[in-house]
Length: 114
Image (cartoon, rainbow, N blue to C red; front, side, top):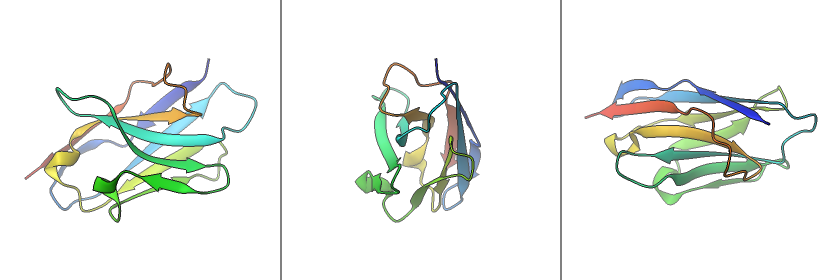
């Protein structure tokens, strides 16, 4: 099974930045689609951003212009650069590959204080 390890979370003040990383392993082929989701306390997990193998990116409206998803030089590593963070961005962030919603990894906590 594919293993997903998300890292880079932490606590920042509003307006700050964080860079999340996801390392995906356990597959002999390159993943086609990579995505970030998040889940705030008491809320459902929601889509944040995705990047396709050809480079196309998609963002949820609330993060457009502030977050950037990118692939790393390593084929199965990708990132989420988060700028101008807001308290409402506070959540556990999970990475996902190829829309496999049965595999999320442990996630990384992001806390934004006002």
